[in-house]
Length: 114
Length: 112
Image (tube, rainbow over all chains, first blue to last red):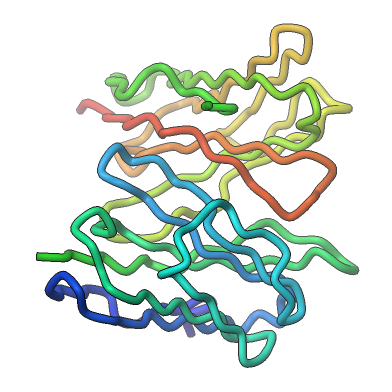
């Protein structure tokens, strides 16, 4: 039973398209994140949501818009995809309020923009 | 600006020996440090952590050492096993403020 699941696992699309990556966690955590691992293997935080509220937005282009319909979901929508958006995107969740936990990561979504 | 640095991109260690992975950080506000392990095509998984009030934390074969004055931490794996071959990410956060900063990772190869 997967704790943090992302779909799709692989995504190949053309420049200029709009795409979404979905993330769901069944751990009851109150905080969810999106991280980007670029070609240099850097894992950089993009966004953080706590109880559906945006907490962290790390100088990510406006083309990236996270949406959290509820505490268990944090989706990432990307408009007008560019070649430089090609990367592996990881969703993660953790409990910050109450009994804190470490972050649990999804398996990643490899996005390739051609 | 890299706040968490792992200067060795890869490391090869003989099976049964000790693996030592190093990490340096620049932000003195960090007060919690973590190591994550990552296999190919999988997400990082939490391995071990240490609070800044401690200088050592041990969990089975894994021990993390923290030297606050040097802003340096290390992960020791002993004895190293084939299944330990993976990429290891050092990470840090300050005041549990929701943001975990990762290093670039070190790829560990355990040789038979």
